[in-house]
Image (cartoon, rainbow, N blue to C red; front, side, top):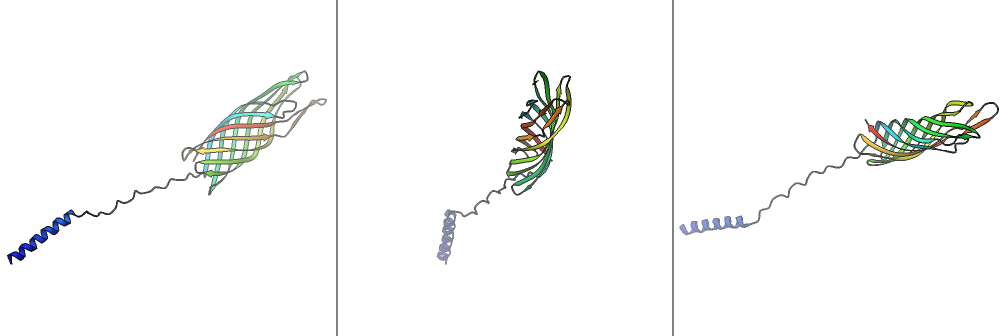
Length: 212
């Protein structure tokens, strides 16, 4: 009987030792939680500032004024999938000038402000927006010929162009754009002689916007 008990005890010790030598099996660690990157959405109201350069072409008898401009912007975007539509308006103080002569008479042609109200349509690639735009443009044009003519007129026309905008954060974006703005012709006369102003502006500007 003692031999049987001794044999059983030895067998139990051997089994425990063998079990201790076997490799342990543990469950694999849980995978790290994945956070999908957020996709920027362009929907919302925004305000901003803009500035750049404008130059005239085809100016007729009063030349082509050119110079700098700076002002403010307000707008709204609405995003559907990757397409973005919206409205944008801006007013810029301008310092566009052209001095010259009509025959022997000197003249001055100066644009003090430019306004646009446009629709925008674009394609969003996450934080980048490629857009085209079209709408109304207006400009305050002052034309003078000393002793003969002094006139300040609001010139109406169109605005067509496009650009790119990039959102650095959920609220801050920067843009660069080009606009072509053709205005209606204006004829000045003293009853005997007449002169025509043809105003078409090429506008290149950058802007910084804050989206609410």
